[in-house]
Each structure stands twice: as structure tokens, then as C-alpha cells.
Amino acid sequence: MKKRSEIPLSSTWRLEDMVESDERWEELFAQAKEQIKGYGSFKGRLQESADVLYQCLAFDEDCQRRTELLYVYARMRSDQDTGNQKYQEMFGRAETLSYSAARESSFMVPEILSIPQDKLQEFMTSDNGIQRFLRVLNLLLEKKPYTLSGPEEELLAASYEATQGAARIFNLFNNADIRFPAIQDDQGNTVEITHGNFISLMESSSRRVRENAFRGLYSVYRQFANTMAATYSAQVKQAVYYARVRRYPSSLAHSLMENQIPVSVYHNLVETVRKNLPLLHRYVELRRRTLNLPEIHLYDLYVPMVEGSRKSYSFEEAKAIVKEGLAPLGQEYLDIIQEGFDNRWIDVYENEGKRSGAYSWGIYGTHPYVLLNFHGTLDHVFTLAHEMGHAIHSYYSDHSQNYTDAGYKIFVAEVASTCNETLLIQHLLEKTQDKKEKKYLINHFLESFRATLFRQTMFAEFEAMAHEKTEAGETLTAQELCRIYHQLNVDYFGPKMQVDEEIDCEWERIPHFYTPFYVYQYATGFSAAVAIASRIKAGDQKTLEGYRKFLQGGCTLAPIELLKLAGVDMAKPEPVEAAMKVFEELLEEFERL
Image (cartoon, rainbow, N blue to C red; front, top):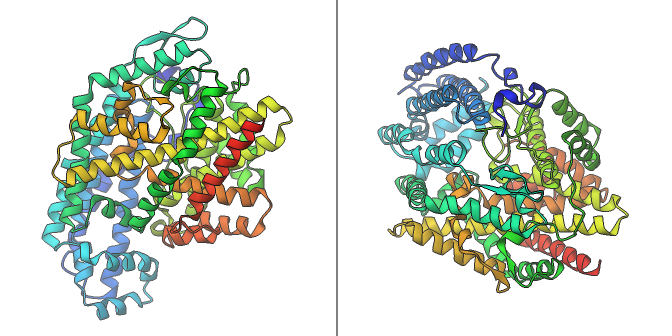
């Protein structure tokens, strides 16, 4: 494993585009720390006039931008090497500053909602610039039943910093502290299992390598089951507490309302996927037969079913493939991608202490960034397409909307990324004339369905069960969490799958569980993206035009309404059912081939 200092500069992101130096960050931090004291000049005055209300909203927006800049820069510096104590300390200070700003501004919502409605409506029609905050004000009015008094909101804001421990403990444990054993790879070389190479090892054609990687990784997590159960339980209790304090019926309802998503969308996803689990069982059996296995285990899920078709790609090859596959989105879209490739938007390779996985992030007013842990697999080529989908969504939104309206909701975030993946796989399937390669690509697409639509819905079920048990006063012990997770694997993968006990601990390593009720949006986003990408690939100009409007929309509309611009209604079961139909067609085509 290379150290951060050993990675070529050209393969790292240029965070200097965000903040030119750590010294400049310190200057900005001192300025922001002083600035947030200015909230006090507005406290108790928001009913005075439309101008005072506007000035407070504009001041708050400026403070948010400054604290966000400090937070994102420090976090991304920390993510590139989580063992770097300097950036851990900077991130901790930025986090504390953001909580201080939240505490200082906590009077705003109760005060705004205490303004008599006719007076507030009069303020909102003023021509003093307040119009750019109309969406925010209307959303506040929707949340009025869940807003507390001024002193209560201040107390609640003051509690946030003290309740974030679980997520921070998980992040440091999972990225900086945990170490996995070494095993022998296909060539007999001794390699240490890492977050970055685990899936590559699980894709090995050697069943010995797959099994050893699987058992090696989860044997370590099993040692920490009690600690991680306590950590995750603390996270769930935090979510349940804030939902109850605000009088939401559940933590699920609280989380979904933040994105203006009806709870019925969540339940509809789980019910529709549950109804179609026989298709996943059929895939498991197809995989067992194709691999010629007497019985199939969970460590047999990642290896390609087509022998000899595993390829390795350089990052230069990956970039070229992604651009070629996304051509249906138009030249402007491709030019933005190239701008990112040429100007170090991307942190490419794994290094010691680097945060696992991949993401796209950044701040308003600066280009987006992408973190990868690129190992040259086809999956990682698709990860590049996926994360650039997020990045360019942010690029379009930031260039089309003001700061307040640019930040699109998580529910729609996964649509742009998965649309890119779907266009790429459709392009590769169309391009190849080789029967074996076509089977390999169909295998990859089938795996996208399994890993995104089915697996993320299974995660969503696990989360819902954990939160419901906590709401009912039950304790989330390691034994109970492992029992729930084991049974879900049995249900989802069906009677032919040998559900190894090691998988019972997989919940310990899922970062998104520390952002409650996030993962279901991968599944809904995947369903929407399959529909949109298929139409764009077929040359549907109306869908392409609607999709561009969707990318530019930020949060100017509710997520459900934004998706309707591209012709998809996620309030109905049809998009998930349509995705399942595509999965079934792929199964049939693979069987024919």
C-alpha cells in the first residue's frame, strides 16, 4: 500500500482550487468564527420588516457558504489520508464551527414561523430581493407542525455536536484503524486485504482466493461486533430522538420529509422488490449452474460468470470508455467531463489511510471533485462514470441556480450517476460482436441490478427494522443485528444460496447506515435511471431535453416533481416494475447465449 506522498500529483485532486492553502483556511476559519457572532444582531427582530428578514436570510446564506467551505475542504483533506492528525484536527474544528453556526442561527426558524401568516405573506411579496428565498420560506411553512419554540430549537441545535460521535467513531475505525489479514492471490503473491482490493479479490477466478478474502475480512469485523453494535445503536438512537422531539411519527418519516418524499415511496420500493425476489433467486441458480458449482456461497457472487473475460483497464482507458459511452448526452456534457479529466477534479488511486469507496463532493462556486480508489476493474470504470454523473449534476445545478436553490436532494442524486452507468453498459453491449464479451457485459448489468436494486433495498429493510426496534424500546445487540441481517440474506438470495455466517457482520462495514435512510435512494434512483437512459439511448429528444432541465433544476422543485421533467413518476410502482422487467429480459438473454 503506497503512502499518500508516493502518489503522483497528477493523479490527485487539486483542492487548492477550493482553498489555496492550509494557511488560507486558517484565515478563513478565524473570519467565519467572528462572523457568526453577527446572528445576534437579528435575534428578536425578524417581525420588524421585510428588509430585516431579507438581511437575516442573506447573512445566514453567507455564513452557510463560509462554514461549508471550511468543512468540506478539511473533510476532503482528511479523507485523502484519515491517519493525518493535522487534517483530523482541522475537520474537528470545522465541524465544531458548523455546530456553533447552527446554534447561533437556531432562533431563525421559530421566529419566522411566529410571524403572523398575513404579515409573512406581505414580506414575501416585497421587491427587496427576498424572492430568492421564497422556496425556503414556503418549505419552512410546511414544517411548521414540527418546529419547536425558540429556546427549544436553541437547545436542540446545541446538542448536535454531542450526538455525532457514532458516525465519527465508525469513520475512524473503518478507515484508519481496522486492518485485515494477508492472503495469497491468484498468482501466489501475498496481499493484504483492504477496502480497495476486497471486491477485486472477490472477483478472482480462484474460489480459494474468494473464500479466503471473504472469511478474512469478516473474521476481523466479527471481533468487533459488540463495539460496532453499540456504535450503530447510538446512531439509530440519535435519529429516533430527534424525530420524537420534533413530533414526527417515526425516524423514517423525519428523514424522508427532509427530501419531501412520502413514506409510501419507501414502503412501495420494499414491497415491489420483495414481490420480485423470485427473479433474484433465479439469478442465483443461473450463477451456480454457469459457474458449475455443486452449491453456491455468498463469496461466489462477484466473480464473472464468463471465464476468461475479466479485463484490466488503465485509468486513461477508463476515461476514454466513459466518454464514448456517454456520447448520447451531447457534446456539451462530454466537454464538461473532459474539463474534469484535464484539471485534476479526481483523486484516482488508493493510498494508505485513504477513505474507502468513492464519492463526488465540492462546494458552490468551485468545480466538483471525485474521490476514487481505482484498481482497474470494469466495476471501477463504471464507478468513474457513476461519480462523474454526480459531479456534472452538481456542475449544471451550480451554474443554473443560486446557492440556496442549487443543492439538489439526495433522492435525485443517484439518478444522474446511475443514468451514466446504464448508458455505458448499453453502449458496450451494442458495440461488441463477441458472444463471450456480450455475456460478460450482461453479467455486469445483472450484477448492477443485484448490487443496487436488490442489495440496497435489503439494506433499506435492515435500517427500517433497526429503527423500528429502537422506537419500540428494544436493544440493538450484536446478536440481534446479526440475526436480522442473516435472515434478510436468506430471504433475498433464496433457498439455493448457502448463507455463510460471516455475512451476518456485513452491516458493520456499511458507511451509509450512518446517514439514516439514505441507501433506499440508490434503488429508486437506479429504477428511474434505467427508464431515462433507455429512452435517451433510443434517441428520444424529449426525454433528453427534460433530463437536461432535471440536471439544472437543483432543488427548485420537490424531487418527485423534478423527475417528472424527465418523464418518470417515482410515486408509482411502475418504474421499479419496469426495472424488474429489464432484469428478467437480461436473465433470458444470458440463458439464450
